[in-house]
Image (cartoon, rainbow over all chains, first blue to last red; front, side, top):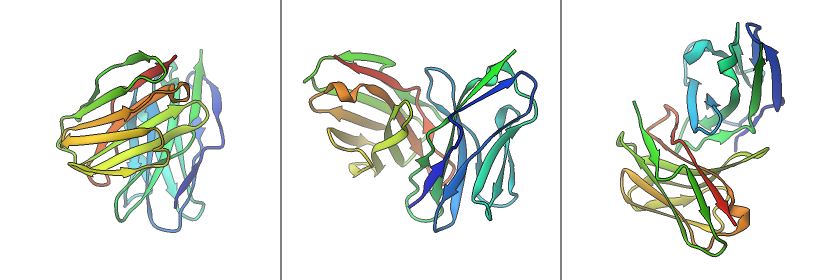
Length: 114
Length: 111
């Protein structure tokens, strides 16, 4: 079974500052990893995903994440945030074989202030 | 683009009522999912389906049932709504490992 830990429930940051949202996972088998964003009163939108290949993955809205197998991490980063990035961010994992159910972390609320 | 639609954005029901939440996807995805989302608990899987008429329990199926009569449609049924089922309900669909695509959600309040 997999599990996902997002240690930070809330991350406050000023506009144009860099940000890193942390995600660690636990799994005994190979995994696929995902980051989703949820704006207020909306569903989840896929930001980026790691399936294979390069460990540095680029997504929409200037976000990127790096898969680190030895540290079982998949941290999300953005070099300069905007007010519009204020949202909740969810990390998710699934195993690479069989039916792929996603296991989600509890989310990190990114609060960008001017 | 994948589109997942849910029948209602907001719904208010009384305790004991039977509630139907509908979800439709337009990308011919074989897999569909129902989650509920509560503050501090993240997303929890209620039921999923990998084919028409096939369904599997997720992590919290108690008090819910589902129906998938057509590939594009996946319905969540609350047989007798209770106040502890007040939540945001999210539907998703997928095909293979590319990730799940979510609808806008239905915020259900049971009074």
